[in-house]
Length: 199
Length: 199
Image (tube, rainbow over all chains, first blue to last red; front, side, top):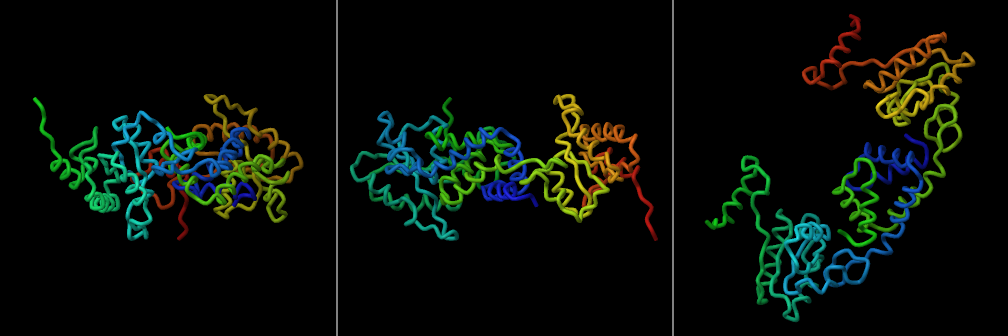
């Protein structure tokens, strides 16, 4: 509908996840109407993002060096590894400030429908990290959905021969939520995982 | 939270309209994980969009030449001008295939709160287009909201001395909508603008 480059911009923006044709159009017009300085900043970052970003050789997190910030930090507890699906999950857990150990990013979850098997995830790399007996606890923090649960089950079987504490994040009611609106599976898990209240 | 360029990318994406921190993060990870070819395509378009895009010297629509596609098209009816707020509105009207005349983009609507007066809109340029008596009809297609209605009222007073048919787009019930859910102002307008049904 638009002439040349404006339409190209709308098309390219429309390929990004979560951006439909209306949003793409709104963003394109915003870009056309703003200062060219801001736009060229974004363009420059896009140009160099693939050169600069690599994945940490230890944990698989996004990084600008061969080892990520967390793996390089000597204050982190090397005895405990939290296994997550994606690098995004590392940041989500870091925000809680509850965990001071290291991470391991699998790069997804087992999903036969999408053709993702255990061998396409970074399972072998995790086993290699267990070789020197530093690690004593593995926290499996895959998503509490079908794929995440399957991955957690597979992983716990794989970790069984090692002398390790293997834990899974608790499922239950979200904080600030309403009992009435919780689905039956979540509510069932909350019952199952109930804890004694200290008086 | 992220290292260097990934965080910069998230920040820059977060400045775009309609993109919150979660969306920015999702898009950034999508970009990091896709082929660098697609990303450099977007980067290149962003680099050149400000050089290539200009505004049509006649109607103010976005264009890659000094006159836009519509103004250059000899098949369009030069006797009729549709006045809109933004270039986006031109495309919205073009999609209906109901109008074969020319356009005039005001570049906004009168809004004292946002400091937009009539003199910062392209009103004078519209008056200049009326000088040679080619134009016989002006269709005011500003948005049916407070600012758009104020602009339409101002414009119709301005156009009064000319010998022109000045019309305003009809307000009423949206097609496919439900009478029950229509607000009272819209329903009132639908009554006001009711039309005789031919038997």
